[in-house]
Image (cartoon, rainbow, N blue to C red; front, side, top):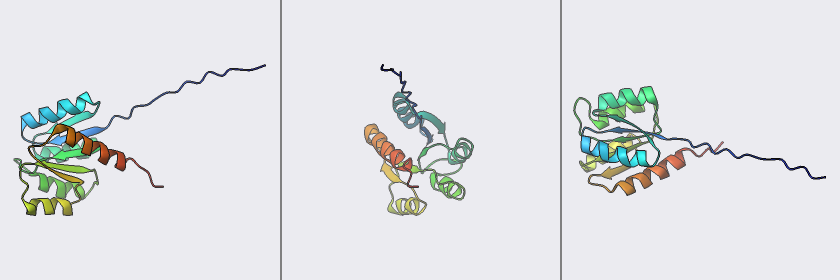
Length: 138
């Protein structure tokens, strides 16, 4: 006599949260719409101070961070953030000055992407960083 046991496989989708910190509403909307279409959860902030508060409150999986912003610029935010968190950060900025790139790298960014950029390339980079970050080596 054979007994058939019904098995149910449940797939749990882990939604990744991305915080976009940029003072340009067009860039924020462009990135947000593309990420939401790919089932990312998106948070936004228009300056570094608001971005820091959101990052500490919400603990996103990744931060997309502009450099030149009012109130607190991206590098200032990153310095403050690194005192308490190692959330992966991608700088997305029109200011590709080598001194800024070097300082951002010293603060532990994952990548520096210059504006203008291709959204598909940005999302591919994010996917790689998030997949590497989720690996466990225990």
